[in-house]
Length: 346
Image 1 (cartoon, rainbow, N blue to C red):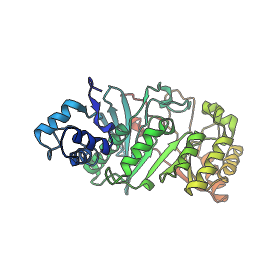
Image 2 (cartoon, one colour; image 1 turned 135 degrees about the vertical axis):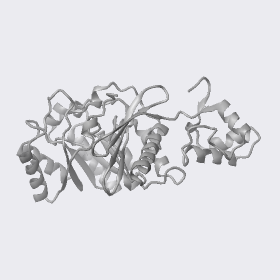
Image 3 (cartoon, rainbow, N blue to C red; image 1 turned 180 degrees about the vertical axis):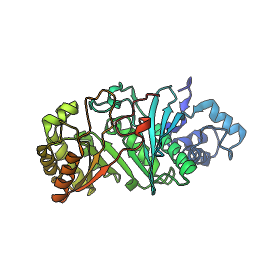
Image 4 (tube, rainbow, N blue to C red; image 1 turned 180 degrees about the horizontal axis):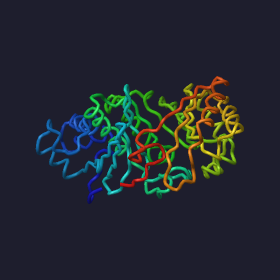
């Protein structure tokens, strides 16, 4: 907020129409402004060229557009781009563009810092300062779409909520952002191209299921043994695996969308046959697939990537039990843009 001016993107289309009607203007002006704000992602009122100068000045007098700014951009040797995104209040989050031969994925943040305490993740070491607003999430997607068109000559194809923060701890704003991203009045992206990744908040997974959302769900699991998971993700003591499993069963019963488990194998932590067998049992409760993710160190050396034999043990055991498994190599490690490395070092 600047002075007593309102953030115009907090208004619905109906509120914008009412704003113009209250001033004796035509209601459709509200439609025009709404289109500029969302479909055209205007940063300023002056950009709204089909409005008169008087109307633009009137908007300037009453509102602000709290637009994000890409403060710094780093490019990895593998093509990955990391953005340090400055928010209107000076706080910074990071977002990442991940290109492959066939697609461009935006990895976006949902909180400044993080609400949870995963010991292997750099973001969790930052204090959670606040949730991002829907428009701040939306702006990250627009910025990466623009970069994809500029540097790779194609539009953004996929979105993952795997950046800074726990999306389900900012539930309402994340869902509002996705509604805008998928709306024909916004970016018009298919919800099937969006994945929300959570560390596992059972109550909110059930809430999503009840709302019959259309996007995909990924769970940052890393162990299907409670004691082990609690040692690396202490919040698991509050949200134990039994509660998570029941919430995921409920999710599948309501949405019929299979679940992706994100799973890092660490030396001396979960690189045993017992750990794999527990994962196999956990995968049986609802249709799922497993992404084995390469670990990206965060300086202190406490966690180390398991050796190739352990990864092969996971692959073979999962495949032998009919569970789809993919090994994901990390992108953007040289610029600290890989999974678990986002920590605002810039």
